[in-house]
Structure formats: structure tokens, C-alpha cells
Image 1 (tube, helix red, strand yellow):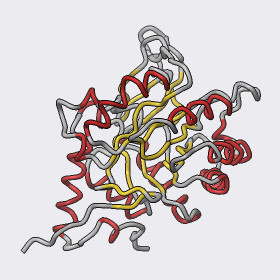
Image 2 (cartoon, rainbow, N blue to C red):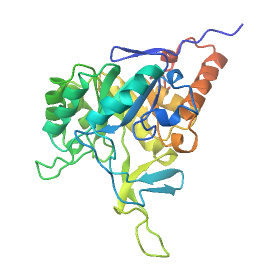
Image 3 (spheres, rainbow, N blue to C red):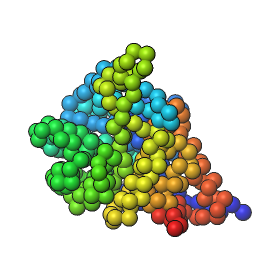
Length: 306
């Protein structure tokens, strides 16, 4: 007899049918993937980063494949919060998806403007703050590289948000735990660990950088051992849920994150070459639990042996 497996989780008070989420910036607004996958079967969809006004993004080339990964410098291209609410959310509501909206800005007021507008929109489960943006009002320092700025920004936006607030941490810091604690102290309901790593590549034929902006964000399997370590560290030092992100392409990758302490995972770069990647990860998770006669995904969270 096959043991019934319960893949559902509670994430910051939000019920999810399963712990596999499509990562922001890799799954568009969901509608682009509708013909490939039944969207409501995915635990949640985190849509593209949303700003106060539309952004066209960077000039090409904006993507470059690297060994076991990908460089990207899309430049946070998006339709802006007003068009998102008007043009994108109706589809997501009809599709029956659990929707997380990634939010960013270049100063506190921009972040707050986006959240204030999203508060009026039905069908959103939570906000995910991208704090890997430069604070243009304070010398361009990235919000997520300063514990003080992280704590202050999260605390300010927590007062605006009518929904749970997840904070997506930058890995480009000296001590990820310090930033995790700062976000928790500011009032974060969960953490996403982590965003992409600053990296670059040079064409040895032309002597030019392979990305127009010279540097970009490195993602994919190449970063998984590093982000796994960061998830492990953060999960041990904060009381709020940690969502693992970085190089997850199959169920075994996700299982590593759960064992390290993640409560949920996000699938990102794999979506570029396999639009059904989140569902494949989900199917593999179910088989893993059935094979080991475990009844719930929660049975393996934080269960790494030492």
C-alpha cells in the first residue's frame, strides 16, 4: 500500500498545496507558461519584480549561458504596478494560482507606492521584497548590503503592507546571517535566500564583456552549494521561515534545501530550459517521500544529520 503523502505547507500563515514556487524573473507573469504547465498545481508563482513605473530594462546582450549556470542583466524590466494590476492579475486570479508579487524600488517611497497600490488588488498572497537595488537617495548603496538599511526599509514597509512580507536577501554580502536577522528584526514574515551573485564573462575573440552592462547576476546549479550553505546558516539563526533558492533543477536539489532547514523552495533558472521544471521537482518530491514512507514534507525540514 502506498502511503498518502501530504505536500501542503503553511508559509507565514499562507496555505500552499505544496512547497514548490516559481521564482521571480524566471516565470514571467505566469501566462507565458500556461500552455506548458497547469499553473495551479505549482505551490505558488512569484511574478516579475514590480516597480512604481514601467522599466524597459537593459540593452542586449542581457543573457549568457555559463558552465552550470546563467548570467543575466535584464535590468528589472517590467510593466509597472498599474499595468500589472490592470492587465496581469486578472489572468492569475482566473488561473487559480497562489500569487506572490516581487516588489522593488530605488528609494523607500517607491517601494511604499507599489505596496500601497497592490494592497487594493485582490488575489495576492504576499509580497516579496527585492532589496538588491541601489538606494538612489543615499549614494547608491544597495539596500540589502547594510543591516541598518535592511532593518529600516523592512520596518517601514511592514507598516504599509496589508499582506505578509517576504524579504529576498542578496548573497553579495559578508555575513548573510546578519542581514537575515536585520530583516527579521524589521518585521519580515519570511526570507528568500538568495538572489543572484554578481559575476561577469569576457569574450576572448572580441575582448568585450558578454553582457552589455559588463556584470550581471549568476544563477543556476553552479551557485547551489553556496546558497545551500546560506539557507542552512539563516535557518539556524532566525525564527521565521526560510525559502531556499539557487540552482534547483530536480527533486534531489530541493531535498537538500529542505534538509538544510528551508520551509519551501523556489525554482528559477531551470524554467528557462524546462517550463515544467517546478512540476517535475514536485513529482520527484512526492516519489522521494513515498519511497521513504514519510507522510509529510515537514518530516525532512531541518533534518540534516551531523
